[in-house]
Length: 471
View (tube, rainbow, N blue to C red):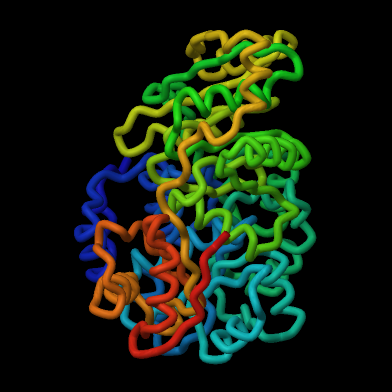
């Protein structure tokens, strides 16, 4: 089996990018999938976020574009469907990164919750690769603003999740608008019957590629379970947050109603917390995620569906406030901590009735969780009455009404804040995110109002933009 990138015989520009990024060894899904895709075969791949699957399908697409199809025509030639806008953004970012040595490559995100006009304008000018959610892609097909007749590759990323979210009919309508002689790829964490049925209808002799799950994936994560009395989970969570003062904590609940309840309890106790669930409008989701990534919010409460594709750097701890029904979901949740060679921490809250769920998790992971006890019921009750014992977030997040389409780069924002007009130190600036039409920048909280005023009074790339403090 192919094990390194040199053996793939990629185009010169892709080979250069792979070397620049320091990629050497292929991940298991890449080693199995890329040679098959380079041969033009249809594929069903079992792979999850973080497995390298995006590069596995992107490199063959970019190779084909450069070597055989060409970039001159500006027709849509590849389509990637994803369940959420966040995953679309991650996939598009990876495609742009890998295709950065291909002059003129145009990648467009089509997702709901965003204005139509910029998407229509980009489609009119022409793009090569579309990354989108099924609903918005179908909207454009109905408007006849998206033409898929030149497509040579279609990727359904996290196909099982799209089916869970009720997108099957939309996905089928989209596939019916593409040429019959196309390459079709399904990537899915699981293989329900609905995936098999869609494969039979829309793929030609697909090769199934499975990467065996390793139980050792949790080895870098310290896993602890606290037994708490029935009804005491809110106060137990508050107590643990107060005792540890985590910089960033992701808390999973099974229901969006629970998410809202927990956020309300934490906020009343002075904890900077955000919520992420399916009922949020897209703009609200963007702001919640930006604040958490920028460390303007220290705790994020989320459901599994809303957090799908969520990738946060340097996450201190993952809480299982509600225990998941399956061991696989547990592993997927806690896998967001303990990355990049760092030790991770996963904390589960379990009532006496839920011990059987812990046993299921231990069986699935092949490891024993460390049991601990929380404070006494009296201490926990007292904890909910305390306020302002939790360290405030160090950073604030600013919104800028300009982005990639305005030729804005992170360096432009940094320069505006630290130059003569801005006057801030580089050490006062945190993460900078530049999106297509807007940007976020983290600044030291005690300088946030000053930063807002100086950006409003000054210019970025010689232009005035709207500046707001994200609250």
